[in-house]
Amino acid sequence: MDNKLKKLRSKKDISQVALAEKLDVSQKTVSSWEVGRTTPKPRQMQLMEDLFQVPKEEIFFTAFNYKNELKEKEVSK
View 1 (cartoon, one colour):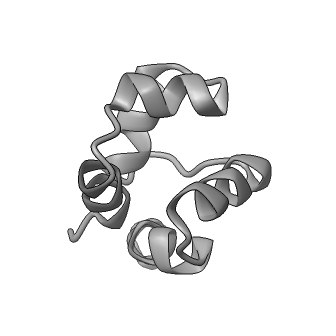
View 2 (cartoon, rainbow, N blue to C red; view 1 turned 30 degrees about the vertical axis):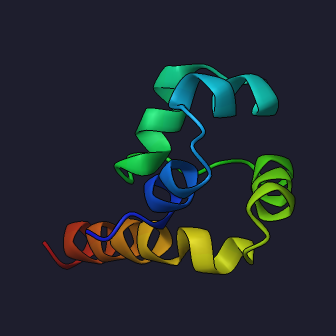
């Protein structure tokens, strides 16, 4: 899975810890977003959109799509 958040964070030279501090979450939470396990709350998405100057939909589209695919597989079982 392509990880846009990790790429944007690396490009700006922001560690997971630093991003977590800016968003008032744990480093573990940022890591979870990056692997697509969870997605941020709307306020956190907006803050990241402002920080990275990239639409939140573009940052998290892959993660949303991945989670939707998993849900569809569970439903079809």
